[in-house]
Length: 253
Length: 193
Image 1 (tube, rainbow over the protein chains, first blue to last red):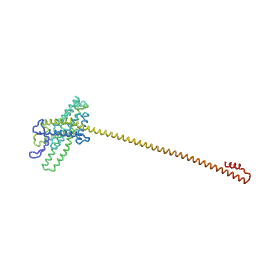
Image 2 (tube, each protein chain N blue to C red; image 1 turned 45 degrees about the vertical axis):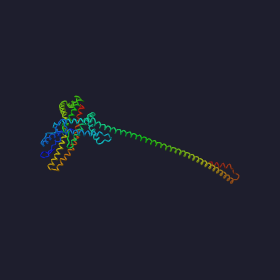
Image 3 (tube, helix red, strand yellow; image 1 turned 90 degrees about the vertical axis):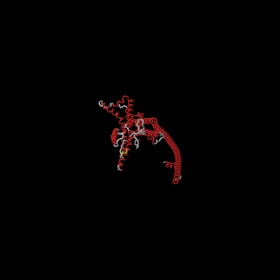
């Protein structure tokens, strides 16, 4: 949001997603930007919480320990539920993804902060990493039989080629939906918050003082919803990762 | 899940459509969504990979082993405590059993003693009763004997008196006709009937 040249309030909900170098103007491969800063903060926050929480050596856990252990137990349970006993091997990877996304999303809720996960570049890399590891692990585990999952043997023979086309498309769309879902959710919510905020500013500027309550109430509701979405999207991203990995680990025939 | 997916895609689609339109009202400096400004992708991807690798290594080597160790230690401690509690419980149960046994023993012993005392008293009582019975019987027999003696002597005296009376009567009626022996025989014949 900004004040236009003629002093009028204008709503620019996408302004918050702009990536700016922290030092200088150049935007190269190694440039440290606001995105870099918030990624580092997310890593630092995750590490701080889990390191402080993991330190607990007393019989009755402290609050920090409880939080760390609940997160640990929750994701570990999810891994073993979806992937079976082998899921433990992928637990560090999935826990890293979950914690990074969760903290990026939640840190993004701080007013004035930057939401790294609202960028498709970020979520795309996360999703592509999952997609590539699924293919690599699948081929390593099941050999060429991994691609048998496109050939639905339980369907009538005549339908199988048609289903194969659909299965192949849905398989290759996965990284797209996986990444756009997260980035889209984060971006949409933040943009809506900005629109409400801009509306509030416009109402004040237009001299309709008391009416400002409406967008503020809207913002409160949206903030609560966005907090929920932040957690749910991190969960969805990691459980989908588990489900995709399950395809690689276990043949469906 | 499908619903979530659909709504998520729709929301992102709506944002994609709405964003340029809203941004356009400002008069456009850079144009389009910052997300699609590919200039920034290199830096974003590079630092994302760095962050993820750092976090992953930290997780795998430090954080997760520590949390796992903490959890295991706690569950072991709790298990130990439960084991100890079970031991104490067993000990308490054993102590209770020993106590119950001692109590039962004592009760049995008391019963035994009471029974012994009762038996002894019973025996004494029975002995005393038989002794008393014997004494009573002896006394009764003695009494009967004396009664019989008295009766006998009385009968003797009666027959004597009767014979004497008969003699006297006969003397009075017919003097010199009295026969003491015949009178006595007649009296004893009469009495003996």
